[in-house]
Length: 190
Figure 1 (cartoon, rainbow, N blue to C red):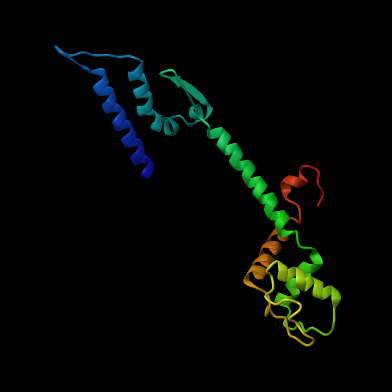
Figure 2: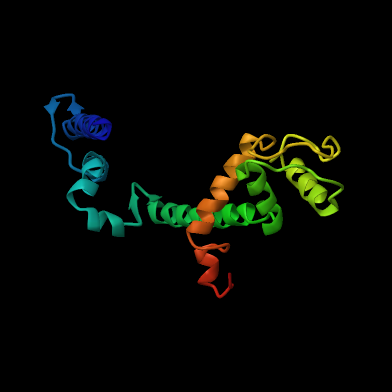
């Protein structure tokens, strides 16, 4: 509805300019003048409707010259850049999601899903996992704060960010693995 209103306003304005230009006032009355500015005004009057009437022709128009000015349509460039940005964003998302080693991710997932996860001693590797998870904001307690016998399972120390990370990573894993499809098509293996 908004686009239709804009089309009508642009066309009406262009037609008014065309009428004023075409029937320019002269000292002894009206005279009819058809020249290049009038044709440019007519093009602007039709421009909002061209895409609706002739979509395949408008797609092919890249530039035109009017009143000595070169007007270049950059629609294709914008679409191409938008597509490239989407592909790069997808790759960045996958790289970010899979930047956490799988064993550390498994620890995070166990902290969230296991009903019971009790610290039973000085587990050096587990404490290093906890430190990585704490540094990234996925758990809310530092390994230095945790003591023997602390219950940390059932999501008790997993932050909302950690829960979201688990959800997003599981979604990416379900959609085809650890490498973006665009990278796989370039010969980079999963």
